[in-house]
Amino acid sequence: MSEAASGLITTHPDGCPRCWWPGLDPLYLAYHDTEWGVPETDSRALYEKLILDGFQAGLSWITILRRRDGFRRAFDGFAPERIARFTEADVERLMGDPGIIRNRAKIRGAIAGARAWLALEEAGPGFSPFLWDFCDGRPIQTNAARRAEIATETEISRKMSKALKAKGFTFCGPTIVYAFMQAVGMVNDHLTGCHRHAACAALGHTLGEGRHP
Image 1: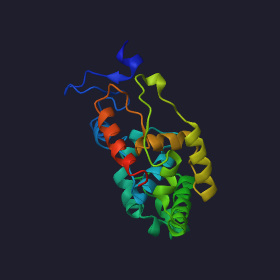
Image 2: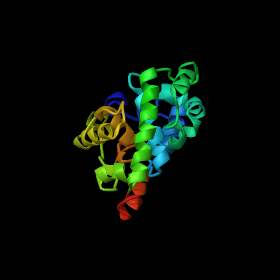
Image 3: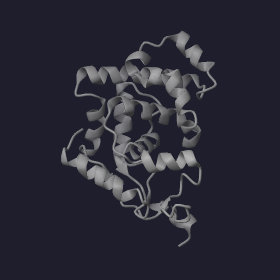
């Protein structure tokens, strides 16, 4: 089977086989090798990733990744407590910021999401347990060997999407939510031949032993 068909790239200079999607872009490769699929349990970090995935809608992730520092600067380090207090003046400020994706609806969605995040934190048990409960606190191991075996959405991502929307989040359809789940390690969708698959599976096993973050 060809690399294009399998989705497994084995011709990297360092000899490590990898999933197809980061290509040879150094920034994208670093993200694949150090972040994607690693179980994340910090509530603030989960908020940041969900909001950035919302900004990605209609774009590629590398477009967002190249602007991530700009987003962090513009959105006060993605501190929901501060973003929840943003006003229309902040929306206009952000609409003039070339370091981010300037989309008014998505900017307002980030503010609404910060307020929803605060409500979840105040009501308990918090944003992270709220999300991780959808997979019983344990990363899902898909063990996909080929690109074609990787889903774009699942029943769990549909349920999570519906629950997030009910809480006040926007730009969180089931496909966006599934991409989010892959990125934050709720799903280990590294191909089984990728050098990161086993490492992320081991991290998931360790997290699963505690059941909930």
